[in-house]
Length: 371
Image (cartoon, rainbow, N blue to C red):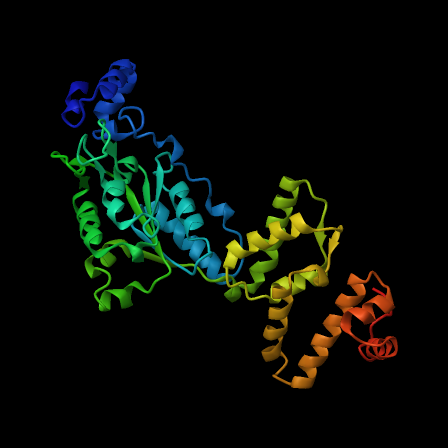
């Protein structure tokens, strides 16, 4: 088939001009790889250069057994170019895994196109995914617009929050995955598409399928390789590694010479991190921006972190109330001394004690009179 055969799907002036401008070598490449007209060099609006995955498997930090297993499964899935279903709580790094899988696959030179199924309004989702032909509806551009599936040709589609996709759109997605072709809204001829699909959710899709809220046949298409990303509270051995890595990178970016004390790091290791890795990144940036001294101590951490430390300490201390109270009291005394920069009268005032009572408690806990 000659290069002119590609005009059966698109005959707009921009495509004609681009094709005529291509060197003979590149026209030969198009003839050797049918469907490449849908890539960025040929079809207007299909600029795939902006759809780039930034992260690799090496960017997934952690040495906990659960994370190591998930990372290895991601590597094998990438080489197989099969559908992947990523499961995990919000903030665990599902898109990080998706980008890393794309970068480790034979499709790494192709586009990585993320689609947030929860963020796109229901009435716009079909046009966003499938695109539309010129004049397909009121407000449509005269050139038409390719959908995300066309933009992902030769690469990877990442369907984030797949559990929020409407049922009627699930039917159309299933057909695309089965037939490997799309028809734009208002269009007539199907366009071939070739991409790997990665889906992610924090929902229990099997339960949704049992309730009729998610198509079971679509679940079977997406759930070829399932990767469960553990929450941070289940891999505490990785907390220090993550905090130190983000701290180093962010402090260099902000030009701040600030460090965390060992005691502060221990507090962060005990925190349960409900926002997972995303919360770690947020906390690191907040501490670096707001720091007023070179070494951050436990007393300088947000109250939410230290309060949760106390709550989490209870089970490990056997729910023995006097022991828990003593631990809280010791922590408050240490924090008051640091905040008062060793001024014992000021520290006593901060915790609401007389100077004599403050001294007695310091002695009881074996604390020095200044920190």
